[in-house]
Length: 315
Image (cartoon, rainbow, N blue to C red):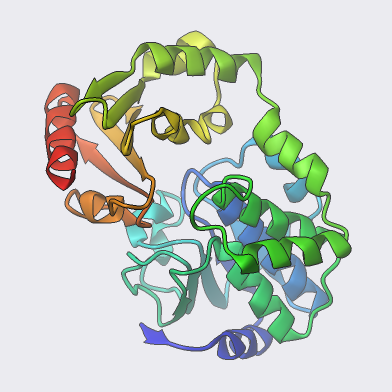
């Protein structure tokens, strides 16, 4: 992948049309915010642009997705946002794994799968980069752009609480509020509103919790049976991986999420003193220093043993 600047990203987008914007599977607020903000900006520039994802977007993001009408076209330019590696494309988008023209990302573990790319691992959210690209394109930010960008920044910084929150994060958030972003509504929806199904799933997760290494490692499980028993949907799982790390004395929080029988998504969180991205890389994953993930197939007891052992070594 050839690294280019923000301005060059903007220039390439303005010179393109029929633009497909790829999100990672199991999309979060940052991926969704980036894709929809960029699509709105490109349409304001007279382009055809459409965000796509292998998985359904959770209903709580309807305030973002409902503002953009579907456009059908034959893709001529492929852009990926908040996407670090091709396995994250998911089944529906894997056909584009060797066709990405431009990658915009903030994961240090980005594998450079695109033709051109801009990666800033110091950005608290990929949405912060997208805002810079939109500004460089000369597109005026309106409510339909401000809301998704604010969502991306707020969700990836944990409502401006995580260690990746920077002065830039706050400044951009303030500017987005000036452009119509509904900060109170978004933060209330993302962080203070929970379905009964989500609360039931949290109860199951807390009951499954285990501690290792004198309480420095905390582990929770989200199984298919828990999902079925609670009635929870995919969107209800967002943010659960933060629970183990919130406990006093815990330095590494690990969440085992069963996606299919024998297949588990592992999410790791730390306070930043331990690089969990390096731990996840050992299992073929990656991410950020304080937040990373990977997928492993096999027996859950063996997987737990291996993951916890590696985490213990890091301590």
